[in-house]
Length: 414
View 1 (cartoon, rainbow, N blue to C red):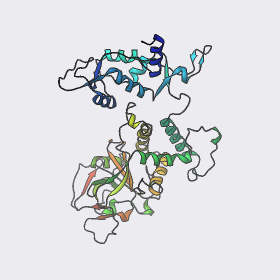
View 2: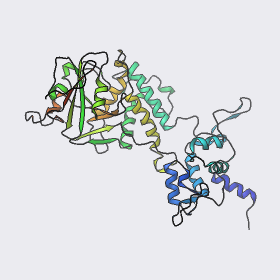
View 3: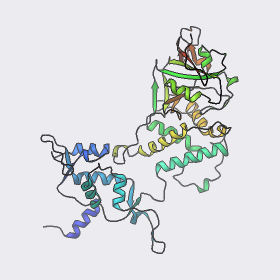
View 4: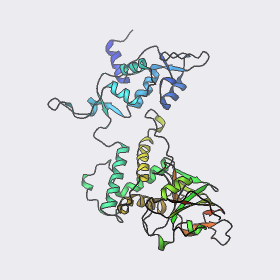
């Protein structure tokens, strides 16, 4: 006995979308790796009804209704029906929040390949004809919670309490919601994200790191000690990751970036570049090559997507250019505190410590590093008197000298 029209409507409402019918779609009709992977795994036909692709002998297209179920599940991780998420006030003009219709949502979030208008229309028609809005509209999404926490952390350590922020009373504690991250807790959340997203990697023995320094025209630095981190008494400048008084090793993974990160266009001194080689493998936090942000349709990456959304913005903040006008002593404070946390407190999933942080150059877009090394951690090649814990070696002949304004690139004997 056939069910009633009401039963059919109830079934579709419970499912969340309407059936399109006897059509199949191939992976070429979308520009999303997760949807493409799903179609490849569910392919049952040799012909695509939307693009006309036909490959006899190889199943390339999946039933559109199965694909729709997969797509709707992804959309519902981001959107809910406005009737369930927002209050509605006739006197105030309707829904009390930003809403969008099914077409706007699909066009914004479902990456249909160019020229597949029929597919786009079928997806739109399959959705309920009602308004949509962001899920948990009045709450913070996980990535927003992290972003808000980082903003508050930066404000606190720059303008309120720099050294005791982890134990100082939170003046705004009464106003904080359960999803908000207190400045005192932000570093712990960063550590968890780094572990969960597997951002630790090894810099292998033999890998090259370039380091530049500006010096007077009459100087000709030759030794590792002249290119390595300064002694404590000479660490007088506040840098991106290290405050004055705490020396660290700044470098880059190519010569051009080392020069651009160091040169001072207002100076008429000489810029020299040295090429060090890693003598002992280093474990680093790599913010220079973050994993791609997962698709909203990648159901296996739903839990890590918010963290990666935040980390991409966080990495941009870490690397942003700061003008040396005196305010760098304030603007660098958040990154200096983060660096100290990863140097002194953080341990990886296996209990391992971190030897440095990799980040992206604001000048060239290539990889830079700050390594937690002092002057005793660098040595010249063949220097048997150097301490056994030296991490970087300066090979013979690995130095080039450059003029900033008045001299072309030139080599001089090592």
